[in-house]
Image (cartoon, rainbow, N blue to C red; front, top):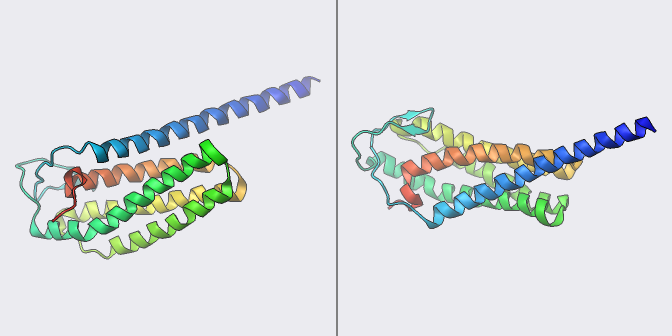
Length: 200
């Protein structure tokens, strides 16, 4: 009888921890979506960007006198824009696929069907980004963007594992990778497309 009680207590604790973890995942995903929606709908006035700004860790700018992007940087931004648009849309679809799975149907097959095409989208985008020639001032940022797209691709593959073994912990790992990728891409997009306006 003692073994049964301790076993059921252990099961209850594990269930409580899982419930807390999944609740945190859903809250994190909702916060990420809310931030993206807010950012799209309430765009700040477009600040000027320094042409020869240097990146720290591929992301942060040293702000000096604000000037427009150089012609090379403008060309890079224009070449990256259509890929960036696809990456953003695929990222939002991935987030909503995870939310639908957790809050609506719990259907792992549906989750796989929604997410698998996104893996291909991210992988194709990564290949296209990798061949774009970046100006010297944006080389580190370019590498960070390539890595961010790889993180998104990795996040989709992690989500698909839920359909293989039923373990929702994969969603938490996928959300962490997705969040890392989103932050990196948001920082670069603020440099190239302030307020997410399409470059001329």
